[in-house]
Amino acid sequence: MAFRRGDVVLIPFPYTDLSASKTRPAVVVSSDIYHAARSEFLLAYVSSQISQANPTIDYVLADWAAAGLLKPSFAWPKVAAVEPALVVYRVGALSARDLLEVDRCLRRAMALVETALGDVLAEVDLTVQPAAAVQALAEKSVAAAVSFASAGEPDVDLDRLRELLSGQPEESS
Image (cartoon, rainbow, N blue to C red; front, top):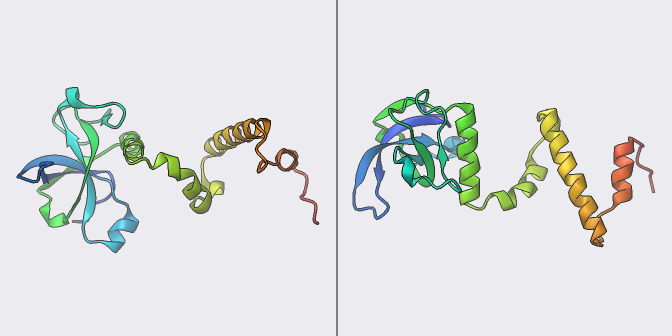
């Protein structure tokens, strides 16, 4: 059986000291790109010990029952690479909302938020993204550019931004 991002599975998950393992739920967090290149997949640990959740890096699942979990649970960035043959059972799948929040926590835990903008600029086609998201990104970007310009940042060209916003064609040099 092929596993997909967001699937909740039961696996023998190792203790952090690698002394033993216990069958526990985990969520597949690796992508189709990863799966095409590697035989194993990446999992994030899921626990029902809600009192141990740290809201900075852990996410309490909103739709835990729909994901096939027996108790309220949280995902945390204890990540492991596991061979599919180790999966005991596929329990279900996270909702889109829960997977989005798990992704957010993983990025925060691994300091990927700070490096994401360069990747977005290089890899994301903004024309196929939701218009509201592109609008929000543009607003934050313009506000930051104005702030940088006010601080004397020489790399900010507010005239170029005004030109783009006015819809006027770029003048050729």
